[in-house]
Image 1 (cartoon, rainbow, N blue to C red):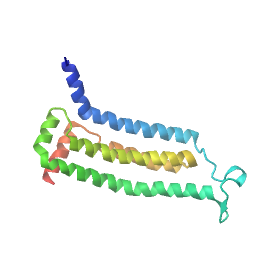
Image 2 (cartoon, rainbow, N blue to C red):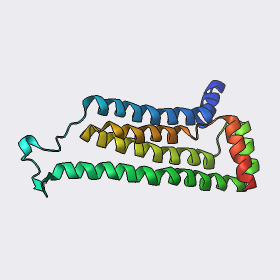
Image 3 (cartoon, one colour):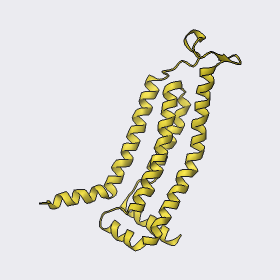
Image 4 (spheres, one colour):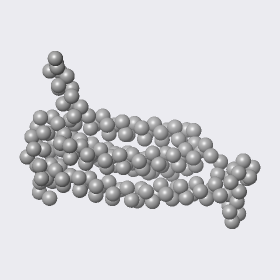
Length: 177
């Protein structure tokens, strides 16, 4: 027999609380990895042991140029992921407009409509990917300037942090779009 408190707990996990826990887990993962990368890094020596590992290309260590390339990749990804996550969230939110009434009823029951769940999780995961990539390169190079994309990723993860009122306003906005 199903106990009523089990049903309530399941509804909470399918609702705003479940989304909040997931987003906070994303934040915790990126934050912990950034701390480890900052404390432990750099784990790679771009010059190489005695200048021998990796050889030289045009008088520069090929490892050093590879790490510089990785840093540029993080920067490029940051430039792409910011508008990408905002656009994706807007497109996914717009899908709620067709089921506006059902979506509002679901929020009133304490649930999050599947479309809004996806519109919250996918852009947050894109922001998390930026943070994790920046942490990997930070761990390799020790370049603390890579903490800027990490902080940016935390903002992208927390940007859609859900509340019942926020979900209602997103549904209302999707219905007008």
